[in-house]
Image 1 (tube, rainbow, N blue to C red):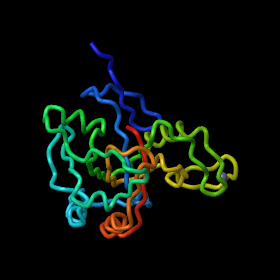
Image 2 (image 1 turned 45 degrees about the vertical axis):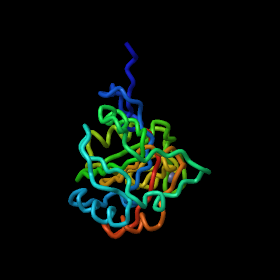
Image 3 (image 1 turned 135 degrees about the vertical axis):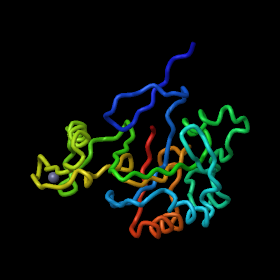
Image 4 (image 1 turned 30 degrees about the horizontal axis):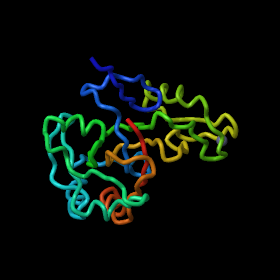
Length: 218
Ligand SMILES: [Zn+2]
């Protein structure tokens, strides 16, 4: 019998056993720069993203729907290394599909939208910095826990400069973020690829404001 792998959801939550015994997936996640930006439902993203060739027709998997990459995916996302080995096709064997989706073995897209603010982070995320003075808040995990217990309370005051700010303005490097809308590209390692202007502008046209991106493993 093999050992149980675990998946991490965010920096401070406890690991939970993965149902399909897959390793965590590396993800490039696109999200609105303004964390309070939400949309009615993920459907609003589908047509515009299909129109530019970023995603194809949705297919079912255990987690719900996933989108195979579209025919212009490699023009819309710039891979930075030379000759990247990118698997774009789902496994031929459908029995292996759920595990391949869970661990990002092939590049595909998942859309996630929620009316409530979510926090997503890589397990290796460093303490966030104050947007005013740059002081790193080493007690951030505890503050996040308090916020999860009372999501309406996003107030935060920097221990160094004593300036108040919402915790959604914490400055992370590209390893964590707050948001309500996430376009998740699975199977991409940190800094391996960046979204191009056409992709970001298409997302901007849906929500009416700028998007940015983070890399996480979860
Ligand atoms: Zn400060």
